[in-house]
Amino acid sequence: MDSLLAFREQPLLELCNSEESYVQRLQFVCDTYIRIKLKILLHSQPDAIPELFLSSCSRMRSMYMKYCENHLKAIALVAQHKTYFEELRMYFFDRDDILSHLMQPIQRVTRYQLPMVQALKITERANSPSREIWREAVTLLKDIPNDVQMIMEVSKVVSRRVTRARRRNQNTTGAIDGTPQPP
Image 1 (cartoon, rainbow, N blue to C red):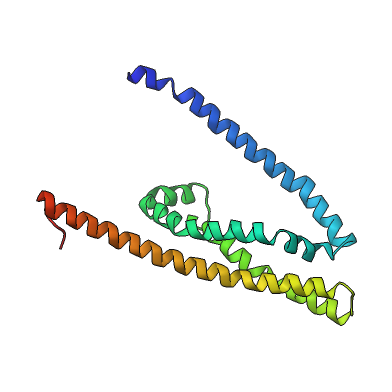
Image 2: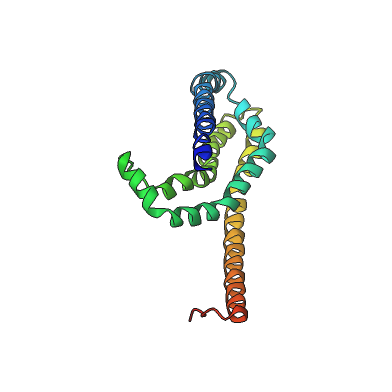
């Protein structure tokens, strides 16, 4: 059986390699096509930026909310494998730990509003006809950090309740089967 299971490694390596290749190709698209398109839009159609935020609002909110919901699970996973992640950090000479990296998307979404508020002020001073769409985008972006904070707090509460329920269940199970109970 062990000799047969050893053959599993090849298809699993193939899976990992193809996934790595896929991510590299996506990175290439981001680094070339998307970056160039954004620079062109920034200079030729700056009013497309608030429209982009408004048109992708529900998708963006959904992705960030899901990320926030899973963030506590990620923290718990990192805690379970703390030594492993610390060894990797040191191996790659990374000054930030894995938790710092995992926190970046949450921090990022709360900062979108800052440059947009500045752009809105300039747009309003210029009395641009596009100022209303900028206001809408800024309003939307100001709401997202509140949503993120709420989801993070709810996730913490749910996590605590699940942890307590598991402890109670373990204590109950131990009391029934006669295993020693923790103090």
